[in-house]
Amino acid sequence: MKIKEIREHSLDQLKTELEAMHRRQFELKSQAVTEKMQATSELSKVRKDIARILTVMRERELAAAAQAQPAPGGPTA
Image (cartoon, rainbow, N blue to C red; front, side, top):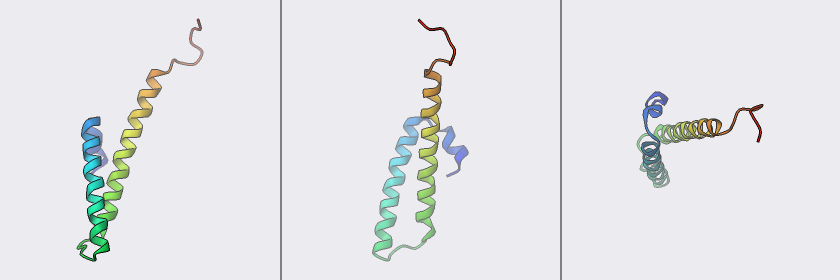
C-alpha cells in the first residue's frame, strides 16, 4: 500500500485497515513458525504498511492538536 493511498482514507478506514494488517501480521507470523510461509518478504511488507498507517494517523493527530492550540502571543484574559 502506498502512502498516497493511505492519506486518501478517512480515520475510520485507517483504523479498519490497521486491524486487518495486524490480523495479517499474526497469520504470517504463525505461518513462519510452522514453516508454511511461502513468501518471506510478505511479513516485512505488512510491518511497513502498519508503520505507514500509524504515521498518517499520528500526523493527523498532531495537525488537529496544532489547530486547537491558540497562537503564541495572542490576547490574554
